[in-house]
Image (cartoon, rainbow over all chains, first blue to last red; front, top):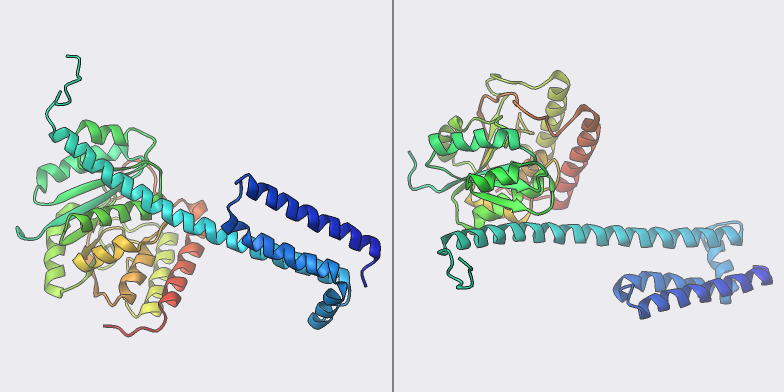
Length: 128
Length: 239
């Protein structure tokens, strides 16, 4: 089992974790869409800390000797998951940026050509 | 002379201020039958100013995107302006436009979807260094294993595509080091890919985009990209 002091420490940590995320969400620094995986991770962590029996059962199931190691592995798994979603988001954004840049250049050419075709001082506000 | 065919030459240019004027002026004076568009890929030198001063047909990318993104912009332009054939050549004067007419005719005769200007069919002109040729050979064999289509000069940036592949490439074109991967795309779409012998010059000014230091990265990246490209298409029947 997990020692009680550690359980208390971890509980405080999980609570802090949620407070920080909610704080940033409230300030709109984070987009809710991208914090869902963070929140899910926190939820699982919370459950594991408040019901250590579950953690013990799960760790046994995976064949890991020590409970603490199980906790670490769980943490690492979540971090990897979050990193992968981040990479996915970055890739998708890169794709979108690419299309935007290309579209901008195509439009810029059209505008340039339209302006060249337009007679000078057609706007009327030219101080000639 | 193919008057009824609308042909666009796409010239990606990144910091090609030294070469671009010569390449484009040659194109305008000697080959007025072809349209062209320069894709200025966020150059930091005078490329953009030269194009503006000389009133060249140019697309300015506000941010450097790499060769793949630049060439794709050209394909999108070709698609939007309803071209029959798009040709990509390098902005450094390596590729001689004199071959183009024959290549277009060859494309029609062979009913090809894609014609690649190849140094290694007749083995004339600049042949690249030995180590680089081994790399090209490796990628060529890999492409052949993946798709059943053998393209000897698989990294050649001198290629013609027809209307069908203008559309495909406008939507989906690899980002950096695109040539071998683009060939895989063309092959898995069931395109008829042909090689036509051309003579390439060694570049006059500037350096190749692939230095020896980066060639390991290049090989790994391109090999993986080709494999993944092939895998993501799964088992498809050739048309």
